Length: 284
Image (cartoon, rainbow, N blue to C red; front, side):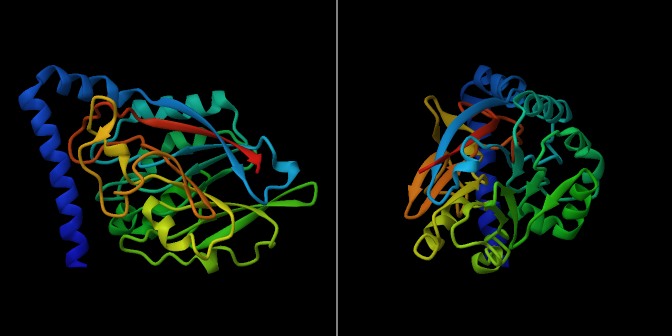
């Protein structure tokens, strides 16, 4: 545990250093990142070809958000705008991939209230992030459940259309938790299209040799949060150093990494705006 805490502190320290560098070297850039960019989420749209996906699920749309970090640097106005934007997209399902808080879940029921307004026929599903574990995952899951969010920890649900199954599962965080892929896939029909919610993207390297074809949706990296012009991250966390943001092929896994909504360390984003991802499933 001490090694985990030390690694986390190193990442947070790097974020602080990046923010301090911006504040010192370019006050205008820091002001833009703090007062403008971090408050405006961008919608990214991708199509994800998925092997095993039944034709009944072609065109199914999933909206992903992640890394809300609602305390202590949360932006209540931003979360409400994010929820309004998602509802305007009219997705079939919404998923959230971890880190709803940073240090404490004491006020999460209040801070997460806008999530109760999400409108989606297949519901809102969520997995655990490393900060949620450290803040108390049972408290986090109870708070989110009060707003209609179904929390998946090494478990899955089968959605049905025309006798075809789409399996959606959530894994525990690898950074402080115990992800169990086999447990999350228990009960899954062998021919079902599969979507896995997993906070840390680099975990795909560990499970890809034994995983069935699947789409893994991750967050964790914030896309770097503070990047060089053009989007090159200045620092990335453990379990997020290889796949920082965007779409990747990792063996049988199609991996997408979302830049997240909130901030860690400094309340600033630069060349890395908050992200809402609309994912349209397609038959591979």
